[in-house]
Image 1 (tube, rainbow over the protein chains, first blue to last red):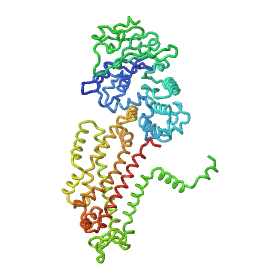
Image 2 (image 1 turned 30 degrees about the vertical axis):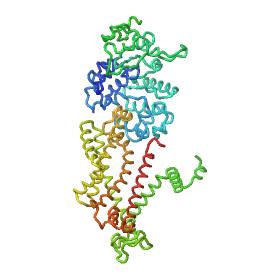
Image 3 (image 1 turned 180 degrees about the horizontal axis):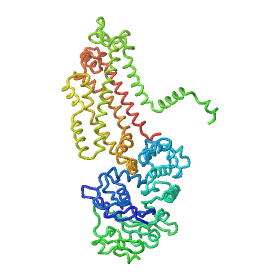
Image 4 (image 1 turned 90 degrees about the vertical axis):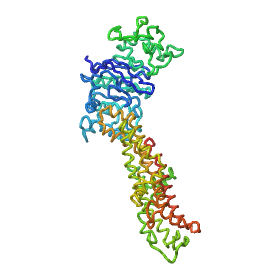
Length: 322
Length: 292
């Protein structure tokens, strides 16, 4: 498998009165063609911002300070807006956490879909209508012709997310980034959406980047996992490896914080909160909350170390953990 | 649905009537507002047909006579029929309101949209100019503009429109900033929609409803401002049957007891302003797209 997307040294910040808040601090990763890559981490770890930067959708206030985002050989950060607009939609697309607010409330589903088809595939009239119905059937909506006539507020959350997925794949992108696609949905619907994404990957040869804090979703769906903390990727490994042999204390903490039917007793948590990115701790960013932290952690930032097959971790003391 | 079930449904016209009936019951206050505006428009259009006298027709035999069956609202200093003139006045005041709102809205919304869509420094420049305009009390500024341009119908409209430009610009910019950050706009950019399409399909249509509400409210205030400016002689000149002018014509008679000369045009102003305010408030609720 070849890398379809290579992000290296990606650094981004929001200017604030107290100085720039570095929300992404040298993010490096690759996405292999055809895989499902999971990105996990707490809120504020930079998962969503990483995804937004790939599509050039960062909020206007944010500044990319450095790094490269190379998609099939071209650096997206260097593209002009027109070229970037062709990449968005035709090469990659994104779906969001809250499906209902991702769809413009003023338009029927048919209008929303027709817009993408016209922009990227030059489809109009009957032909467009045929494709719209195909798309909705493809995302598992049982009565496409009826759904086309609906407004977003007339659809359930799960249906909205399906429509949003249809909207995103309408122009046949190769890479789909899903930002917590199931978080806002009912548990029963979550599984359906996960299954839909898995099926779409098979049928359309999609490459999928799945941002989530639901580790069961990761276990269910992903091939590889990135663990992010405070704008850095602290661990990267194939999915079984991450669950069987987590090397970073933060990953261990995340896995330990899962509610379990069997364990009983109180839920374990990682103490403290993600620090303010304006006051990024020196050394290893996680040392303020880490049970294994030593003096070295507060002064020197750990370098990425390969600890197994495709398994990379940024921690001074991963050996002690193992 | 079976044919028999279809047959039991009332015919189209009664169904519409039933829907209107439900609307009135659900929104009694807004309905009153709509009724007032509808009535005013009808009066403006039909003034020559329903007015018993011409707007400048003088009856020398009855000067300053109180309301009676021949002169419903009484007569003025020159024997003019107040009732007829109040009816004709609807033409002027509605025209001024409409023109002033249309001009102010177009200018203000364009500026606000530009400010909201483009980042600094365009935004900063436009909005600081708007701040300068709104630093003056609106009516005083309108007086200044109308005074500088000279009293005429056109200048009156221009003055009122300019004064209200910042109101629309601020509102439009605010709405724009909100919808610009909306997830559906981001999602549309994310599937590669070009900027003009984002603007035309996703941003503009979603800013429309607060603007529409404000325009309706401003319509009432524009009439009030027009009447005020004409009252102090900076708007329309005397023989024209504009309500503000008419109030000022009768103001000296109020002291001597002939209250009707000023009272009825004043009442017309109050009713018109109230009508637009009621509708504006009602629209605010009705235009919420999430309300089904």
